[in-house]
Amino acid sequence: MTAADRPQPTNFIRQIVEQDLASGKHQKVVTRFPPEPNGYLHIGHAKSICLNFGLARDFGGVCHLRFDDTNPAREEIEYVAAIERDVRWLGFDWADGLFHASGYFQQLYDYAAHLIGADKAYVCSLSAEETRAHRGTLTEPGRDSPYRTRSVDENLDLFARMRAGEFPDGAHVLRAKIDMASPNLNLRDPVLYRIKHAPHPVTGDAWCIYPMYDYAHCVSDALEGITHSLCTLEFEDHRALYDWILDQLPVPCHPRQIEFSRLNLSYTVMSKRRLHELVTGGHVHGWDDPRLPTLSGLRRRGVPAAALRDFCERVGVTRKENVIDLVQLETCIREALEQDAPRALAVLRPLKVVIENYPADQVDWLDAPNHPQRPELGGRQLPFGREIYIERDDFMLDPPKGFHRLAPGREVRLRFAYFIRCERVVTDPASGDVVELVCSYDPATRGGNAPDGRKVKGTLHWVDAAHAVRAEVRLYDRLFSVPDPAGEDDYLSLLNPASLEVLRNCLLEPALADASDGRQFERLGYFSPDQDSRPGAPVWNRTVSLRDSWAKRQGGSGA
Image (cartoon, rainbow, N blue to C red):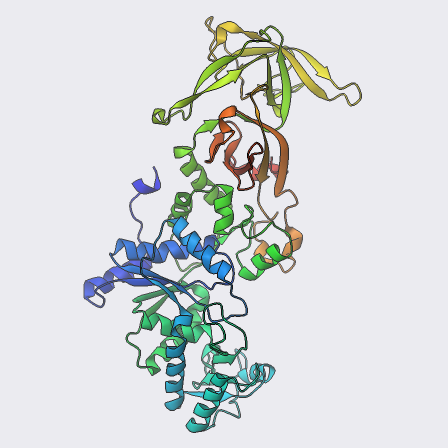
């Protein structure tokens, strides 16, 4: 059953939306996806994207894409472009609903002045260290700032001078005046504005004070008419502040914040800080490294967007934190690719085979379907000559019981071709390594069947030597060697040293010379052309193996 065939799952957020529409509380659903443009999106963001855009789509509403660009020191236009590209790739469109928090800077400033005028905010001149010392702990109340009693006029004057750029970074902040004894630390006079003399990617040097996320986010939601503000569980304790701010301001509406569990995936990390460290520290090759959980990395690896949407649907929306096994994602990828990926023959670790009774100047062109269950995808012809290559792992000099591939004196089937028998083995005189097999073929078995009814247990893939396309193939595996590296401070020491294996002498069937879409390399897995490919020098990435073998390999080579 494909994702399209499965019934639409329900969840507690969907039920809330249904109830709000049925009761008339809302006439139209308006959600938003509010990323910070300080890094690339990862698969955890995909869950939020699918949830927010999916709810709006299913209930006939709209979903905004709003960049929370309130920290210019960490934001770049590159990240904005990457985020837009990733959302579109996942299959969603924000239409006219593209916004930036920076577009509300004047309104946010005016609302902050309103809070000061209502004696609900004040300019505090404590240092960051002094502010922390005054905050208290989970068991001890905080202490009022000595600047909490500043008059409204003095606060308005100082706030205007902060805006005018009269003070250096850290000299003052604007704080909400709530309750320093609150058991919720987020309500102990949180900072709403700080001074930061840094140019902004959108507003340039127009501002030198910037709103904090908790303040800018809820006001932006209200200005956009958001009905359901969906966020992950770490913001549950911030909900009281979200509501407090909106209750004090003459905003056009008061959205409802609803929290759900974030998506955590095994054998990787999702923290933006740690992803930054992996990229800037050279542990991976950029934000789109196929080993990363970033959407750009998954796309480069060849993962179809439909597989990620299916995965997010299967994971579901709950309030229970857990770590999803990477195997579940790989299953969704395989199922999506199984439906659409044409088949191809490729040999990653070649072993030469000379068929001694095959005419030296003859080439057969053998028919092969592009997909065994989808005849509408057509077929192609495979060249077959006297010299071919098979996988080195498909031959053993002294095979154990249960090994059904090629061995001295043994007969096997070549996929779409003939039966061959190993007659002799050529070894390297110095190393003793097998360098060539001399085989014979049965011309009566063309197509892979024997007219006399004899059976063989092994079927091997192969590539014709004269027509083979040489390629580099990159085998990607789990980035970390343990399921939960995020829980370790020394997580970099847990990187899997075999997360990438590069094979540079692979041989592909000629139809793949200029292929631009993914294939299933028969018996090997699903592969996709990489952006590093050049004319005459293709590069392919392994998207996913045909089955999970990590547990058996126990952190092995990724082969």
